[in-house]
Length: 342
Ligand code: NAP
Ligand code: G4F
Image (tube, rainbow, N blue to C red; front, side, top):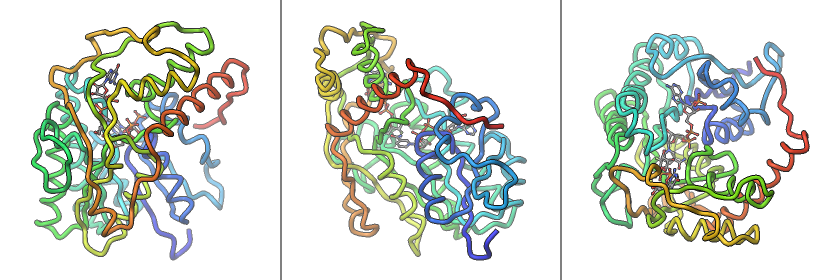
């Protein structure tokens, strides 16, 4: 290991953001350590295919460790062993509707998981800078535009747990002088987005309908508004927060709202399809309490971090449709292969 190489620990490395962040940090010359759940070997690790490194080679800079954010002793041991310079806490049960089905588990992972990791830093006497994946869901029913001063009004067990973590980070900053920052990120999507989030669900369905292997997609409330950006740009914003001399909390957003129905229409039209012929309503995809409108004001990030979203949601929708059509084509023709990993 190089004496000057910085070391980062990422929880949630197999997720959308974790995989992009790992790539960014490896490009910047970091040694990257990621915590991987044993159960995610098949589902999540495919996002890391592009940066897979054979283990135990002299040039290895990516290290994956089995663990779980619910296992405090594991967290303390790994922090003690690798003494990271930076810790990015991205692990979460991140699906809002699912959090109504498993509220206890969501709180354990998304709220207490953060405290466990912060305590692991203290127990291991580690002065790492800390990034917390906070979310625009904190604002819930408070109307847009939302910025760092907007009142929180969470509308789901997921959001309630994330409010707890947000304040845990502020508290550890104030109580222990930890360099800990909250990134309050509005929705950000990509070809690596989980398949049950609305954008990816739609673009996957478009690809399958265009290929003639599906006809109908069942969806919930199409009237809500989201501020959708492109995920690789957002992980750059996370990194910039951690590089600041003083820890702080920042909103990352595009500043433009999109009604779900408009995203659906643009995605279907991009493949030459009429969405109204293929989309049906299913109340099972609705939430007991909806977040009607999220539109962020990221002026503080622009001023202090020099960060700005670049990709418009229309281009994002088309890009995701193209990527899903290509992926399906590769899968159907047998071209989609994965390297062996342990
Ligand atoms: P994601 O794709 O759902 O990834 C979540 C990650 O957390 C996965 O690697 C998952 O591992 C891991 N994880 C789940 N439970 C865990 C546990 N008990 N122990 C350890 N790891 C666990 O989410 P994302 O979209 O990348 O988002 C990253 C973070 O940002 C999350 O905290 C999310 O809540 C937050 N966030 C996301 C957005 C957004 O629009 N994407 C916006 C604001 C905030 P498996 O592979 O094993 O499932
Ligand atoms: O894609 P979604 O499930 O994302 P949601 O609830 O906004 O949460 C995402 O963004 C948050 C940031 O604001 C993150 F913190 C969180 O981890 C996650 O990444 O739903 C978006 C909207 C909702 O209004 C939902 O009711 O789409 C609506 N929707 C309509 N039909 C649907 C569906 N959502 C899903 N997942 N599936 C549907 O069939």
